[in-house]
Image (cartoon, rainbow, N blue to C red; front, side):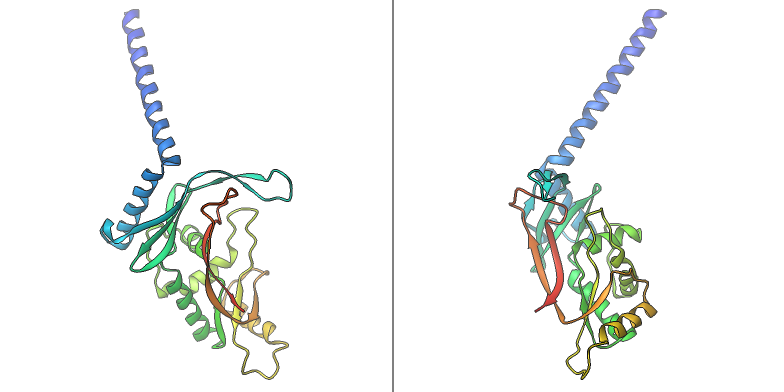
Length: 244
């Protein structure tokens, strides 16, 4: 009887050891394997946009690993960098980024910026020309509003996005302000226009105190540093910034 119990115990221990080993191998592959990550990215995009794999072309990628964030010292802060992919679809190049085990993309960035700007024009003031929307804002919105990474954003989400993304805070290094740009070319006196438009925004939206208005228009800027030795979560962004 004792021998039988010992045998069962050994079998259970062996099974657990095998399961742990398999899980360990899976986690290693999921964390470090570029080819495995690329396959997951294509599968994610196929499901989200209801397309065949042939519709997507991976142009470049950022390998996951440990990097250093500049802190003014000789050795920077150690940070973990997840995979990021540059993908082409429908003649548009965009980024897919891994965050907390899920993949997110910014393919809809241009549409989202237009929808939100149109909402500002229609509901706040027609002089608004845009705001500084970026890749990470889309990720923040989908996570915060519990939409899921495969959710297709529509024009009806514009107000919700404008109420959400100014509060983006992935970590303690994330402190960018949301800037709302406007056209003041037809105004004879623009000294108090920033405050006037900010008041209108606060009447319509719930915004953090570091949001502000500024005269100007926006343009799309692509930030990509896949080949640097100092990676961080923000190494691959498409962002609307002020057009000088």
